[in-house]
Image 1 (cartoon, rainbow, N blue to C red):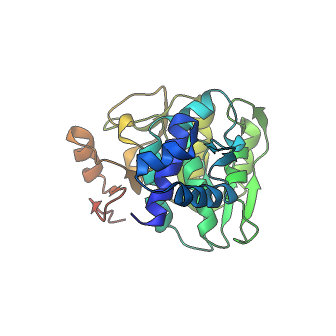
Image 2: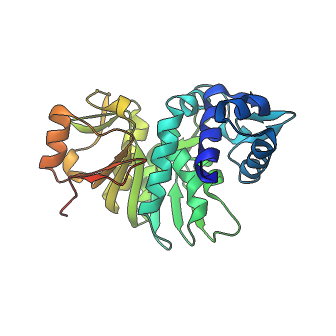
Length: 264
């Protein structure tokens, strides 16, 4: 197993279990404790895990409560999606990045690119994407503070979004179906995502397959506004047919497959 693959598995295992020992990781991956210690040290240096005596745990930047819980849900799929997504963006681009657990996985990988302009309403994403070596400019949008997700919400955020233009909006969502398109469970997050989409050239949705053909309360955007979705398993049935009809590119994480390439 390659070092990068092993370390991605370590991160996913830590997030699923919140705290693990070196011995547990070594047994699970079938490798030596010395190798795992080196991996954990490197991952801790980059902020992906936090070292503790004899093991590793979820880093403090993920906070407490419901948001930490979402970071642990479908952790393997979200790690795969983030690893695939980072390959699709280029140094020097401007990205809106919306609050969410999957986008936080993605934000960690943004340290691998250089000279990005990152605009977000999430304090977690701003911290996770920062690297003194990458040379990013990071803009944290101001507004009403929502402590549960360490994000800003409301009309002030939407107003500030309109002062930017971006190459991409990168968002995670609560649900995706063939009739409404992308949806969210929070009206504030849906409105912020919609405002970012208005000011972007393209829209990338990071979504695990548990959200397919489900409903959420508030519309974010229709399928014809989405340029590509990145998922760990391709959608099927009526959703797949609708995505094809709207020329939405489907990128399956962990493979070389790109399905229904967008003609836009």
